[in-house]
Length: 271
DNA sequence: AAAGCTGACAACCGCCACAGT
DNA sequence: CACTGTGGCGGTTGTCAGCTT
Image (cartoon, rainbow, N blue to C red; front, side, top):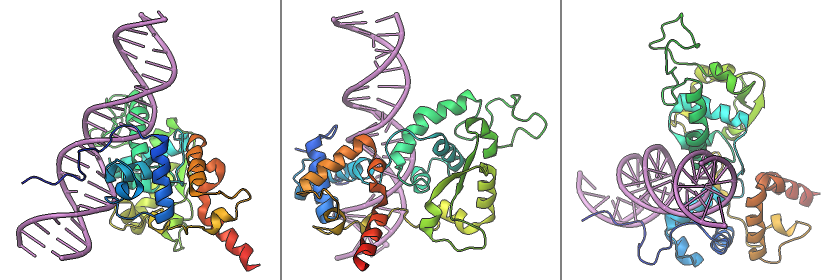
């Protein structure tokens, strides 16, 4: 007796999602929140596998996603984290708000891998492909791993985890905020090495979700949208708007700051 | 203009971990 | 403890747009 498929293969549509399907899924999630994915297709009126719905939502439709290519700094951060974590894309993605594991994985496979190979660096081990190359001929090359700052030719400056200051006890969400500063990746790695809490978090022993999507149970007529100058007449309009956001990048619309919006609304109401 | 090729990215598949029974 | 259902992860494949011939 084999494993039961995640969904009934018969009648389940595959392939690219249509705008109509996206609308249905967005409508459903916005109305009901994320619940049992297996039940979503039926409840949302989709002929899709629940798994497919989850992937579509998490990788493409989620309103907090950035769209577009990874910038130079994000790329550098991916390399740094990959050197530490390996192919643990979800862990890497957890340190890059607005980016999905799938997106990072794809970018790694199509861009960064080639870039590193071009530089003579093995993208798997992060070691030089040819020991006699320009990297370092004097120090025990057979076992030496490139430290991240040696990739500096990829990027003039590097990244650090904002809000994670020494002598402070940042929240995990604070840790997740990545900012670009000219401190160099070396500083980041020193910090990672020094701090066991952060390191264990990155290695998955300590596990806080960056974006707790389970809390996205937006009320049916929530204040967020009602407060907008051009409030949506229906969830259908809202879904359409969200779909439009995918074309431009939701950050252009400020959707990535739901919490800030909510806070500002609460502030207003308090006044 | 059409065929072939390539790169980028969306989507799928199989496996695993974990919770519930 | 065994079994089942579910969600999540990483590897792989499919699709399509753009480029080259």
